[in-house]
Image 1 (cartoon, rainbow, N blue to C red):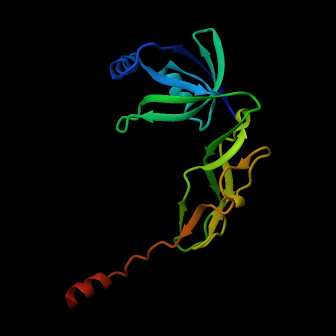
Image 2 (cartoon, one colour; image 1 turned 60 degrees about the horizontal axis):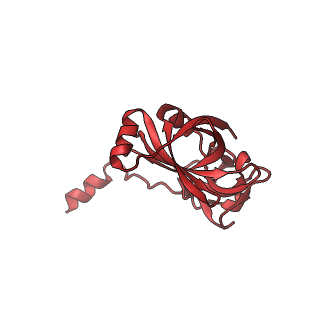
Image 3 (cartoon, rainbow, N blue to C red; image 1 turned 45 degrees about the vertical axis):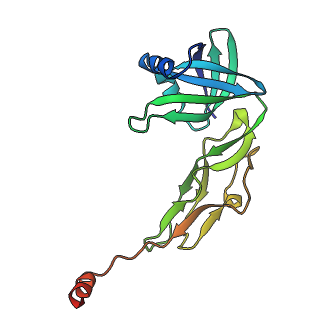
Length: 195
């Protein structure tokens, strides 16, 4: 798991106007909360935060106003729906050794059985519980030779040591669907002439 260092500044201005001014300065407004403490409103450097958030569940070492160092993980990221720039980020305060529940991406390896089958990701991510400083970037499962109707359950996905499922073991994570066959050439034309 990668740890990224970021500087942040506390902010005292709130509301839409303040958020727009922050974004115009190529910064991102955000909130740090957790452990029963009062939420801390922060401003992050836009480009550095964008790079850090490319890694799912990245561990962020925050240097707040050059005085305080805190560890956090992203909890909620809001992006502009059209342009994709960061609008706001919520970070969850964590401590080394603490267990947290997060969703990790599921990567697949291998090929499905021949026959035009389609792989559907029923879950976008696999909910797991892991130590905050040892969250896996992803989990990998083999789909080699799976045919239509087959599914991969949460319990079928190998997890790294110290990581446990935070979901029912029988939850479907991936399933293989039969692709619909395209009509044979001329078949559709014959139906049209009969009508």
